[in-house]
Image (cartoon, rainbow, N blue to C red):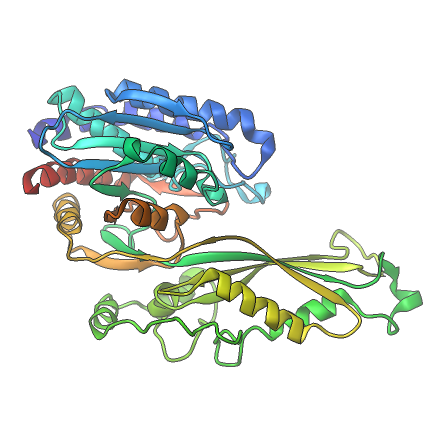
Length: 457
């Protein structure tokens, strides 16, 4: 029967690619209120995809923000129920001038499908819809029960989904959750992600005079918020690359020797990474490998600084304020609220005289780790190996999917992260793409996975 479904997706490949391209044309940018109409239109597009695949009870569930799309197929008696989570919203496209082709005009070049949302998350989510379709259009049934939860606010931290999951607990309750929103180690290097770092975001503002001042009149006599901001930011790391916020590492647990050995066995090449990124050397906390620093250690990064005049020419001013966006990636038992309190103390301590500072926490997400020996994860490994004919790696991801920990904590069930993206796929950046090799093999992986789950439960 698997062969029949494989033949189905092979015969439908060009049709499916066209459908995905139509999906990618939707400018569903959740960060911009100007795209509210497009968000709703995209949600309805997802509903149509689910209905056409044979999914039942498809509905648009309203929230105080963007709607959630639900659908299910629940006729596999005695078999587990899998909740498939994904998101139809995408990141902003700036800087637009760096895109080779327009972000919402999908283009296939050299085996890659380029568009905003191609990997994160429309392309990966689309595979799940088509895997279900293949079963229902050929066999007429699925080996497991399926529910879909596809939201429109993941890229802004899923602010309204947790409350919806709480209120409609029975509707979404399942035996396990499957999410495809992560990356593999590389092309033809299938990988199962068993851990995500948490996230906390801040806005730091430093204020000087009540208005911008001419530097010719006041330079050398009044404090400059940019100078003050630079000093505060410089104080946040020591010379060894370690975060210098007091108490930052209090709840950080060291990885087990087994995990350290597993990470070393992946044989990461630092020089190759440098070459790919166009840098001369890597940076980070001393005493840890690059993969450990990216996956299992906490971080503090400055994501943006805004102040003064930065357009063509010069405007010789002393700006009245400077603003920085800061994010911390969290691991193990780090408490976001305690981190925030310690950050505030640090900023107060290092704020120079003559300026004032304020630190505002914007959002946070907790880290997540799942046992790699769970039978649903081992079944995923078998499915990957079957489709890719390659050994499967168990990895962590340095990024965050805020809703993962919510799902795990609320429903007390494992979350299986089956990613089909690539690390260099430019997610959140210009020229985002989805590798068509993973489009094909990812779809086959899911066909095998549902079959494998049905046989072990």
